[in-house]
Length: 149
Image (cartoon, rainbow, N blue to C red; front, top):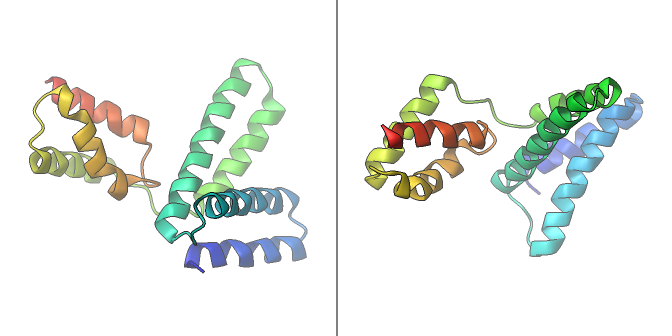
């Protein structure tokens, strides 16, 4: 069992004992996503794969928050923001902007990228290093702006 999955299981038990309903629900949702992926692939997931699942859950929460804000559903916005905060505690420390710029420069030099057609190569190089540590849409925008210059 991966360390992250064990941590999720332990935290679920602790949330049950302390009767933290939202935290318990969120952790159960995360574990269900992990379990679903394990069943689909018939493999035990490592920490990197679990981080990718949690990153996807964060993206879903951010999209939901934007939609709920448009609909003026503050109650649902608060719930999604609370869930997002809980999920983020299981992700690695986010990359700072300077670290991200360094990573992009490294990727561009490694892949020899010089036009927008090389975007896929650069993203493929960066994704394993930045997944869960940066918003990939933001990273994509930064790469695109550099390749267009």
